[in-house]
Amino acid sequence: MELKEIKSQLPEKIYQELEKEIKELRPCQEKAIEKGLLKRKNILICTPTASGKTLCAELAFTKTIMEKKGIAVYIAPMKALASEKFKDFRRKYPFIRTALSIGDIDSSDPYLADYDLIITTSEKFDSLIRHKAPWLSSIGLVIVDEIHLLNDPKRGPTLEILITILRKILKEIQIIGLSATIGNPEQLSEWLDAELVIDSWRPTKLHKGVFFNGKIEFE
Image (tube, rainbow, N blue to C red; front, top):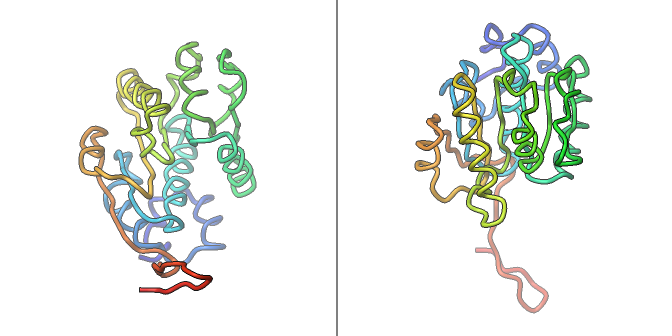
């Protein structure tokens, strides 16, 4: 699928930015769009690293923000990754008001109401919900990166409760889950009431081998 085929579904400003770098969509991006990514459907994307999951998130949050459907929240698994995404998105979309919230977990950060895209961690977002941040009711989209961490014994419960609360208090919210490694994608997509996107395409071929005595023997 070429980018121009979805031009009518994207805000003009976003399309103009994307066409500078992209001509053709990758398989997981095409599948996600066909499953309703740009129509506010919940989507669970399970594809290899570097297969294009992040652009799916970008398409969703730029459309949500530019069409004034609400605040978008991007949940990263670690502070370092959150900081990296903050820098990347702010550089790529300077016209979108982007905030990073990874600090004190005992604050409601009311200033975040002035931003369109909030990048945070699950622990910090959980704190924002518990402190009843006044802008929570304005959320239209939540993107959960590395959503397979739901299975993590330490961090999983927080993420699960967070998603459950969001779905309860925000009936119209769109949730997008991203992961390269999910053992039970069908069950997770059912729990999220989400369309499932699975694809094995990767930009470089993966080779398996065994390293022994200073040499690698490939299969």
